Amino acid sequence: MFVAEALRFSWDALRANRVRSLLTALGMIIGTASVILVVTIALTGRDYIMQQIEGVGSNLIYAFYEAGDKPISRSALSDHLTVEDLQAVRQEVAHVRAAAAIIIQYDRLVVDSAERDVTVIGTNEDYRLIRNLKLAVGRFFDSDELTNRDKVCLMTEPLAKKLYGTLPDALGRRVKIHGLQFTVIGTFREGVETFGQSEVTKETLLIPITVMRYFDNSGKVDQLYVSVDKATNVVAVTERVKQVLQNRHRPGSVYRVENLSEILATAGNIGLALTIVLILISTITLIISGIGIMNIMLVTVTERTREIGIKLAIGAKRREILMQFLVEACVISMLGGLMGTAVGVAIPLAVRALAGAMYIPISGVSIAVALAVSCLVGVVFGVIPANRASQLNPTEALRYE
Image (cartoon, rainbow, N blue to C red; front, side, top):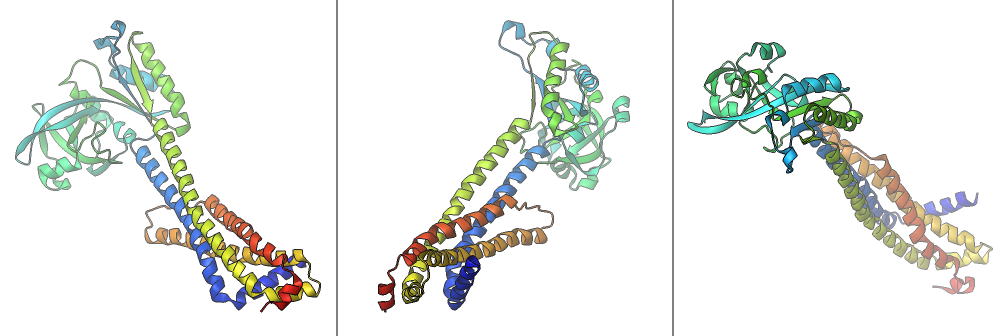
């Protein structure tokens, strides 16, 4: 009954000064909305970075030969990775969804009336899945074309546009690579732009690895790619692939077998740290709002000094006076927090509705934190005015004009 009565008195006092109450709560509205929006922006940025990294390849593992400095580790042809190593990985390693080998060479083509170097990659049909390549027109070569050593190729979208003007015009055209005529069967792009940091450049041709052997009969491959069925198996499969490669070659050979897990973990940690920092910064707005609430409540206590004196004179207890003003500060803070939460959630939802392709996560934790902090601010910054009201002398309060 006592709490209900305090709430009723607080509500009546706020209704009597609606404009002032709204302006007092405005800082809390902005602060609470800021906390939610800041966390939403941080999570959206983190998810975007994660998607970009994951888009390089699906649960990707890559391996390549790395010669050491010691005499025993000096490079020998038998140390290099081979297609047989790829077959061994497929047969001996569990949880492998796809595997591909690549051989990288370079050739000169006439592009825009000028000769320029292009990258030629020999690979197999799994390369598209592993490296998350997107086909614009046409198709990827299949296992039969690899077995038959068909002279077919795919080219990147920028290269196709420079050579033929439009992507559809590239299909069926013939291009000379290392003196052999290849038929263009498709154009592609990377699922995520790597800005030339991967083996795929803006001017790249893909051909069957079996045909690449016409130009490189050494038997070695430059790199192996492995795609794992589940993200939870990536670390274990990475170690297993390294074991298989080490067992198939001499003890002095050195191989780098890596995955994107460490990069993803680092990106996640950076995102978490950024989110915490932004939350701390946005809570400063809530603290400033709390100071505003305290100032207004002190003014309210001064204005209602005579009212407080009357209540004390007719038997009101000091703790009841304290509770009344403390509840009033909390009500202002909580109303501001609720309205700020509504604003902070409405804006991401509106962006979702306008940009359906963009997913914007809304953190339930940020909403809980914002509401909890707004309530805490009301209590902390309402104590001083409430305590001042409860400590007034009834006689002096009654005589106050």
